[in-house]
Image (cartoon, rainbow, N blue to C red; front, side, top):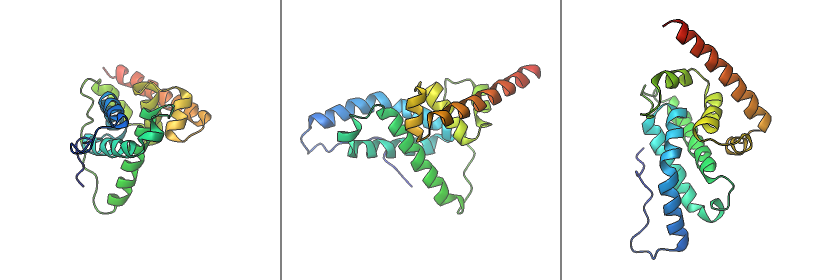
Length: 171
């Protein structure tokens, strides 16, 4: 399944204020959403496709999205949902290839430890730490209650602390 690498606006169509506003938003948020999805999904190719799909859907709904409290969180959730649906469709056809996360500047040990978390916990950690969303914003982005966000984050951080302690003990 091939997705465009960027949202493009028709050169023949007159540029509206909304289109210009979305282009500015796109330029400022695309990389951030991509990195969050790449860390969560552990597949940079799938993350790029999910980001592009989320951005295309965001553009189509820009009139409503621009008034949203956290449009970046909304895009992250749309991309995550799209990737989850894609996984469900192809899981029976073929296994997903193993690939490296696309977070070049991230500590490889930290990424390896994140890989040990279940997707539900990893997505909460990515929202809270990488995207720097509040508990309420994370809950809204992931369609969870704030209590669920707190408990998943607590469990994930406990697991990461223990794994990091074990990692340091083996050095």
